[in-house]
Length: 128
Image (cartoon, rainbow, N blue to C red; front, side, top):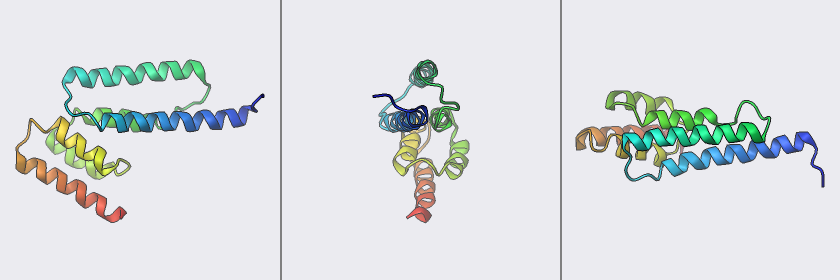
């Protein structure tokens, strides 16, 4: 059965969006992450994008920035993380909490971590 191009494009767009959201959810389940691990996240995503560009003509790639922004957040410092959390409400509480615990967990003290987790909780409250 032939699928009309507009329908095919819609299907591709939904599949790509779901795949990108699933990648971020997978990254949010990471328990530990080294600098090499962060670099591999970026490399894996770039490989994924290269393969997608060969498979489909959908441009721009849906939710590409959603994944890239999340991966880049792994490199933020404590001070930058607080601002980033306030600016990026598109991520779930679980995804934000994991960023704080995994990327900053071993670099900041308990009080600073609790402060960032409180920022996440405060940011999440208005959505409820």
